[in-house]
Structure formats: structure tokens, C-alpha cells
Image 1: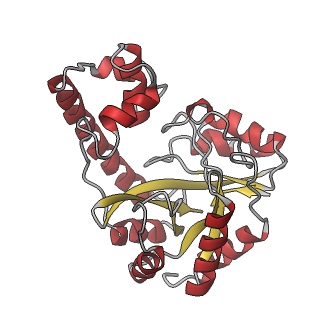
Image 2: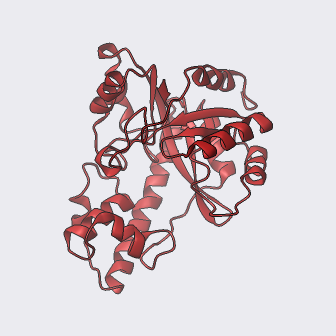
Length: 283
């Protein structure tokens, strides 16, 4: 089994890159790809673990895009960590995130839930702050009973404390990933768009915009969802990938390689991904 979607404390997970590699070994995975949001910051420590583990350690990231008025996540799998232009582009994204975080602090204060940047930073182990850290800070200050309530009442996508950040278009994200030698893949389709959303039409549109694959196996899919998205990828001729979306303690009960219990991502998907990387439409 493989797992091509997971996070460390360099974005919104709780484990170190070293711990993640060891968990991949413990889970007896064949391959594991680290895909922190908007950063490759954990990759050097992650890859340094390769001599100590049998699981093959791979490089990736997860970028946020704006598509049909909502946030869509695109995985950049097998990107080159030494690509200086890609690193500079990720640094630009982190600047956009910092700007959004400042505006969220102002919005929350206006709503009677004042937290400081220091409050939020105290919930994170790295400078990169996400809404997960805002949720923990709001709980720590007593404005909500638990972090999940912060998403439900204050900082979820349609909540009064949410502030969107300037996000990439799908075309930009796919170009950045492909120019860095990677394969752009839609992360967890089905967790976007809501009831009645036409994923067959959306994926065909995204394919025209440069996306080359979709996550057909996912840590929180129901069996019917997995079947649908694997079949959709086959129908469109897109590469299929899969992963748990492991976040450590930030997603309780979700295990690396196994998701909520039923995840099994076949090894041969990695071979097809690498073939796409080598012979895809951009290369």
C-alpha cells in the first residue's frame, strides 16, 4: 500500500517529518509522499530519513485554488524540491497567507472574539499559520468549547469570521506544478461543491485547464465515493492517486495509510503516476 497525501507540523499536521517517515515504516507502506500546504519546508528532514526506513519517501505539496467560487485543493506530486522558481512561488503564497491571517484577526476582533497573532502562533510549531491554529487559539481563549466549533461557527468557509485569501487559478497551480516536474492532481474531490455538484463536468473542465489526475482513494471516502471517482478518472483518461490526508492529532481517528480504517491505495498507482510524470502532456 502507498499513501500520497499527508501533513506535518510544517503546515497543519502535528507530527514532525521524521515521525511521519517512521509511521510510514510502521504501517508497512511501500511509498509515502509528504504534501504540506504551500511549502516544502519539511521535505529535507523527511528525505533525510530515507536511509533509516524501507518505505520510499516522495516529495509533494498541496496548493489552494479558486474554482467556481470555492476553494479547490490541488496536489503537486513528485515535484523537484530543488526547483528554485517553485520555491519562490511557494514563498509568494505564504505571503498571501500571512496577509489573510492579519485580516482574520481584525474580523474576529470585530465579532467579539479578539485573539492575537501571538495567541495563534502559540498553537503552531512553525511560522506557517492556518485556520487549524486559529481554531485552537479561539478554543484556548474560551470563545468556543472546542476547535471544531470554531470552524462551525466562526471561521468555516461560509462563517462570519472567515476571510478568503488570494488563491491561484487552477491553470496557475497546474503550470507551477508541471514546471517543477510534478503531476497536478485534484485532492479529495467530493469534499467540494456540495450536494448536486456535477463532478463529471467539473473534472472535464479541470482537465482542460491542465489537471492530470484526481484522488480516487481517500482516507474519508465512503465506498460508493471511491468507486465513483476511480471510474470517473478512467472515463476521462486521468491518472488516479490516493492518500489518507493524515494530519496527526488534528484529525483524530484517521491513520496514515489506512484513513478511517478501510483505505487501501494500490502500489501500482505510483507506477502510473511516475509514467504520467515522465510522459505527461507538459513534458
